[in-house]
Length: 446
Ligand code: GLU
Image (cartoon, rainbow, N blue to C red; front, side):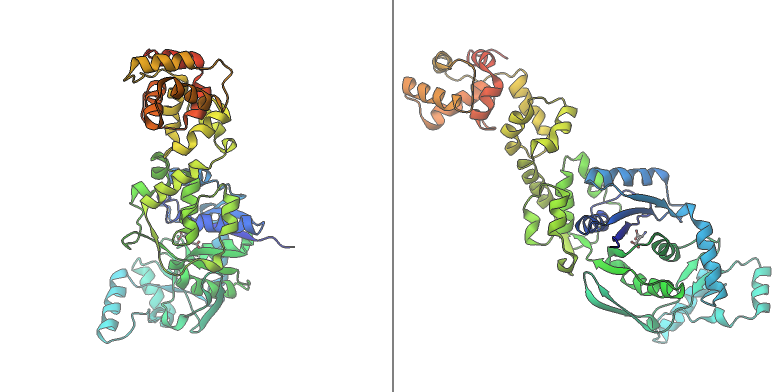
C-alpha cells in the first residue's frame, strides 16, 4: 500500500494566522485520517522577504496546534535542483527568455485593455532573434524566463470542488525565473512535489489557477499529477479577506490571548458547519469530522466571539491528562479532583490559578452574619471529606438555622471562597479542607 504524503508550504515571510493555519490543518488532518505523512516545506526562495525567525515561529505555532511534521525541507537549500530542471525546460523549448521591463509590460497591458483585449502576455519574446537578444544583453538587460503554456484546458477532479477545469488559453505564460536568477514559487513547488512524492496537494482556492499552470509543468517534466484539493478561504465576519497584518488573529496572538489551540484548530476547519459549535477532545477526533468533499465552497466567515465560546466549551470537557503538564507549569497542583472541580467555570485556562488560590492559598472571607457562620462552623463534619460532605453539612446547617436555598448557600460560599460565584462547593470543600474552612468561617484570611 502506498501511503499518502501531503505538504504544508508556507513562505516564512510573516507569522501564521488563522487563515493560513487552515491549509496546515486540512493537510495534517488528511494525513491523520489516511495514515499518511506530513511534510513541512519552507517556500523560502524569496530571500529578501524570508526570515529564519519566521520559519522558527511557524514550526512553533504548528507545534502549539499539535502539528508535528514527519519531514521538513527548505527550498533555499535546493536551488541546484531547480536550476537543473529549468535547464531541461529550456532545452525542451518550454522556458523562454524575455527582456521586457515592468514598464514595457504595463504599457502593453494598457494598450490591450484599451482595445478591449484580455491583458495576456503577447509572447513577443518568442520572436526575438539571437541578435536582438544579444543587443538587450549588451544594454545590460538580463532575461526573466517564462513557461510556454499549451493553449488547452486543464481538468482535474478536485477533492473539495469536484470536477474542475481552467482554460490555459486565457492565461499569460507565467514567469518562473526572475532576472536575478531567483525562482518564483511556481516551479520549485512542482519540482519538490515530484521529488518528495507528494500525493495530495491541498491548499486554498486562491491557487486554482496555479494548479492549471503547475499541471502543465508536471506534464512537461514527465511526472504524473498529484490529487488536488482547494479549500474555501476565510474572511472576517463582515466578509473581508484576512491579511497577514491582522496581528491579533495570528496564532501567537490567539495563544497569548489564552484561546485553546484545540478550539482554534476545530473552528479553523469546521467554521460554517454545524459541527463548529461543539468542542472536540483531540485532533484525531477532529480528523474524523473533516471530510474535504464536504467542505463548503462558500467563503468561511470567522468570528472571534465564536472562537472564544468554543474555547471555553473545549476547556469544560478537557480531561485532566490533557492539561496535567500545563497545570504544573502555572504552579497549580491539586491533581484531577481539582481540575474536574473547576474546569466547568473556566473561560480561559489561566483562570485555574484563581481557583487554585481559593483552594490552596489565602482569601479574604466575606461574612455578612457572623452568628450564622459560627453555627455552620460548629456543624462542619470531621475529616475525611468526600463528595457527600457538603450535602450532609448544609442539611445540618439548614436544620439548625432554618436557612434554605440561596440564603443557605450564598453565605457559605462567600465565607469559604470570598466570592459569590464559582465551582460547585461540593467539589471545592474537600479541596479546601476542614482547617481552612473553619478559619474562613471565623472570618480569618486563610
Ligand atoms: N508558498 C505557497 C503559499 O503559501 C504554497 C502554496 C501551495 O501549497 O502550493 O501560498
